[in-house]
Image (cartoon, rainbow over all chains, first blue to last red; front, side, top):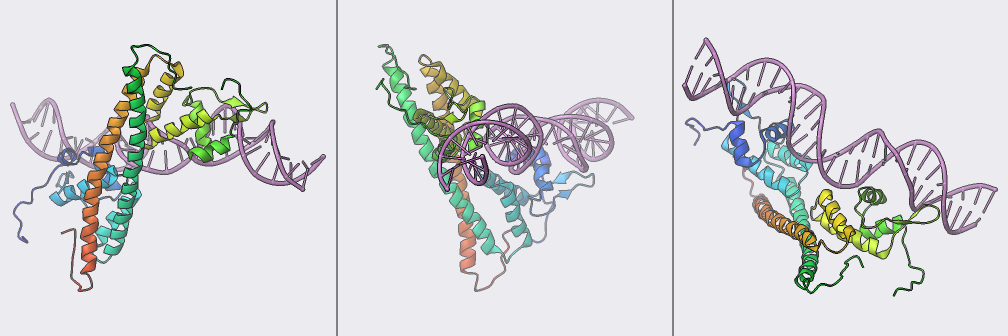
Amino acid sequence: MTTEAAAPSLSIGEVAARTGLSVHALRFYERESLLVGPVRRTSGGRRRYTASDVEWLQICVRLRESGMPLADLKRFTELVRQGPGNEAERLRLLDTHRQRVDAQIQALEECRSVIAWKVDVYAEHLARDEAGGLWDPTA
Amino acid sequence: MTTEAAAPSLSIGEVAARTGLSVHALRFYERESLLVGPVRRTSGGRRRYTASDVEWLQICVRLRESGMPLADLKRFTELVRQGPGNEAERLRLLDTHRQRVDAQIQALEECRSVIAWKVDVYAEHLARDEAGGLWDPTA
DNA sequence: CTACGATCTAGAGCGAGGTCTAGATCAAGT
DNA sequence: ACTTGATCTAGACCTCGCTCTAGATCGTAG
């Protein structure tokens, strides 16, 4: 494993396709230090991403999708970049986020049930609508 | 019920406390036409909200919390303001939103499981940590 | 060699959703 | 009457998270 044979790398466009991030966003993330290591470049200056860059970005996407602010993601990246020794803090960060996600899911489920109820009210109204009756939900 | 006896009304501050919106946000929502009817004023020009204003705002809060854009909320408000006759469109709007919420919940649950897995990885690592071993998750 | 598309940098711009400020007015307690 | 705190308006400003632009360069297919 220490002897490599032409480590396959990806262009920014390919990484964009694989992560769902735009090429703009990828360059932006890099500027914001959201990548663990520096991205390699070709002799001509084009970025070449490794498989583990892509994996990391996929984790980032999950964390972002679930509402982690870029600032927290940056902090997490820093910790990973610093290497072993700070796992407790990484754990804290992730676990705190997990709790926020749980709260978020719960809040959404409450919203969902309120909305579903409203939907039912309207659906029911429309079902018996043909009979024709005045009905003002503002009342 | 048609004869009223001093309909109790609330100040903007009281409404803020009851809805969780800031007084700034309440004024902003009003400017953006997110309220069904015009808000009453005292002789001195202060806003007085009715109980149904508050109910409406509470629905708005749920819809916003669950990610409905202000533009959609505005559209929904318009429909309600126009009165009976457009229930089908209201239903479509709400049901579309409900589907988005469902999708959101599902996405969050996937994120949650990815995060929970990462949390476990770190927790486990820390548990067997005292034994002391190199461990670099970047590898 | 020529085209043409993908990528480069630095930095400006944008949309959403409020938030805040200034300066004035109102209302209630003492 | 005076003080204090809540509210008023109009409009400037802010954060977040990208997105887009301009103008140059790279690299690959003909």
